[in-house]
Image (cartoon, rainbow over the protein chains, first blue to last red):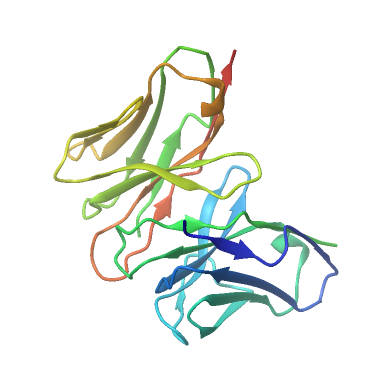
Length: 114
Length: 113
């Protein structure tokens, strides 16, 4: 079974803090994604990566950056957390870069920025 | 870019009834339409998908239909059970290059015993 793990289920941070969300997949997938999920807004793509050290902006990249130094690990970085970044963050991975591949999601990290 | 509208936002049914969730998309180039189910406390999981060369696909109690002319697709769940209670997301994308999925806003389905 594909397993996507996220470093924290719940996280509380203060405004202005630098926040790191970590995601690891164990199936040698090429593609990894970061989404945020908000009530009434569904899943919105922040960034994705189709290879080590490669990254592409999604629909809402402002205020976020990402890092992919190893194939299995994809990190989302909030350089200076703000209250409007309070949300559920979901990481996903897929086998190849083709859009029709199934995306496998982690359980999510619920981030509260005070 | 692609825009996916999903209705209804919430749906309550009695156990054994059928449930239908509808989605429309804007980009006529989209040709891949997956459905994901998200149970409480978990990440979304693919339950069924359809490609534009097919009009309907079934998997036990779940079916998806696609009308490319009208640019809409639907998820049908028959003989609903309490364990079908979850949030369902439709999505659309093009099968080319590194196209990404555009998700609908989700439908919360509640099946009452």
